[in-house]
Length: 410
Ligand SMILES: *Cc1c(COP(=O)(O)O)cnc(C)c1O
Image (cartoon, rainbow, N blue to C red):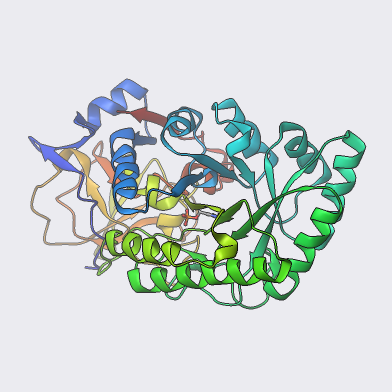
């Protein structure tokens, strides 16, 4: 038996059936027509957003990192809930604008932006978070050819990192952003080239569950923005502080209490250097906003025993939920929270079961020797934390299975 991560506190059962947003999992599958199915509960996302607004200083705005979940109906609802979108490709830019987010509140970060992506961003009037001097030169040249004033911010590769984060995005040599010691010179060059300089984008890491580490990183981020702005002698219109709030995935992980983070940040912002007194501040979050709101439902096709170990083979797999199989952003494979949706709350069988996906590779495990109620063909398996980096972050074409269905409720 191997442990699994905690089921998010929003989920309960009724008469042995998992409820998602008050609806039974089996009836959601019926409504959608088939499995595998991602269900996203907008009610949970709304709650996360309001918790964030309650905890954070009112002057801080909230951006959604679209790559966490770009499902169009979800983006449409998000557009009305948050203050801006951060996109990471030309494709996401298109989806953000289609979802109704005002271009003035969209920023576009990410390495390797092609000329056609820079052009689309400049034409639409969104802010480009520049990742290098080379990208800056291309953006300015494109804007000149289009006869436009480009909105350009500088993404800074910070000279510190977010401790305990699942994915480090700053500190040391990185393909992201411009090293802190060259950032002010680049921003100065942009202003001299006639661009509308929008400020700084500083993203130190992701998936952190340690409030103190986040508090420290945010204080260091504001200090870095002040130092760079001081070097230039110009107030940045916007400082994007990054985010990095994590959600519990694994045994022993606990939900982040964001209230002390908000209190500490409020103090940091109140005491900020004069050069930042006219600046606006934003935080960008993906996983923390939407991750817990998603459940991946997949049906048991076969139950078999091999050398004493029970396998429940399902019609889904890592082609839809790569992260849960342990092959996306983790070093050691650990179990995401998982349940039998139509036996929710029932006692576990004596023997552990391995939930295997339908792909012909030993990597395709959704649950490794987990404690589940006695499982049968036709049962519905629910894999939690499927709201972020699921459908769009998995190799759907691998083995030629159909794309998963997606359903937004609430
Ligand atoms: C991926 C990404 C995010 C979102 O990270 P989460 O862990 O999902 O909150 C935010 N900002 C940037 C620049 C990113 O690349």
